[in-house]
Length: 403
Image (tube, rainbow, N blue to C red):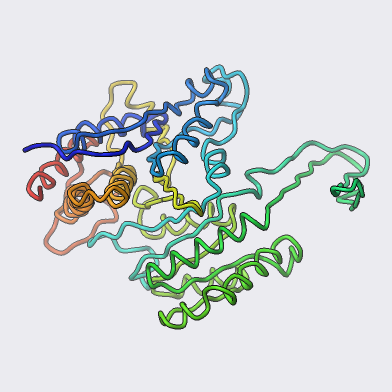
């Protein structure tokens, strides 16, 4: 069988630890046998980021802006322990934060539904898609230590006029943190959410806490409302779907009681936390897709989980691991499908669809990694635990039948 030919490269961002190992196995077992893979490769592993003073992360984001489609492996966000473990020059920023800021995009995360894996919340019958703003807030915050004294928030306008607000008059040691966002990025976030909801024919719920953060969160609420009324209200009414704004605690209660089938738009940190909660409630964080979409139509696909450190330590000792690669497989399939759509390559789009179908069918037929065995329940099917390579090989068998 001849391999599928690509026209334009995908930007490939390699990562760290066990997900880096899975990354190569996925290419070797599931992609390279079928596709003449064309990528522009960037090593975002922590040693290379340290070697280049994190310039490689910036370079990968610029390449994504150039080519339009990227796929990213999970990467380490170093803390003090990681700085010591890897003997780093400094504590580098989170790569995702750098990339998301440069692309000014919105992250959409949705669960991968499988017959036999029932969500922990039994009313959930359809996907709940988390739309996460990917700029600013806590991930671009400036923070520091404080002692006895006065912490102030100062804004100097273009004419040199200063506005000063007292944050806190400290009587002892403490900490301070300052966040920011921009109207431009918030509007891009709003439009991405409205467009996605219309494309998927799903209602959109947006939540903040504007009763507490009256100016900061209130600005999000105002911009969403203005964009909706001006450009999207009629389209939503024609599509028979709703846009609703409410407080985040209210949305949480509504989500738990719902059957799913909703796009839930969240600010950056809220979306980070809630997407992990939703993914776990559907069964596994390793069964969650994630795509960053920029206002210019740039796409970056990744898994929604981390680098699976515990399994990596076992792997380097020569022990077998049963690490779930599904989210990473779907990152690759998402990127390949989008590349095929943009380049008019139907066979590449079909391959991506078949890869996802083969992955789901492998699990539904009873072959899976260890994290899924305890939550898989399907009449007449006894789950079989496979190690990571065995699981990928089983998917390849089903993929071969579909090709």
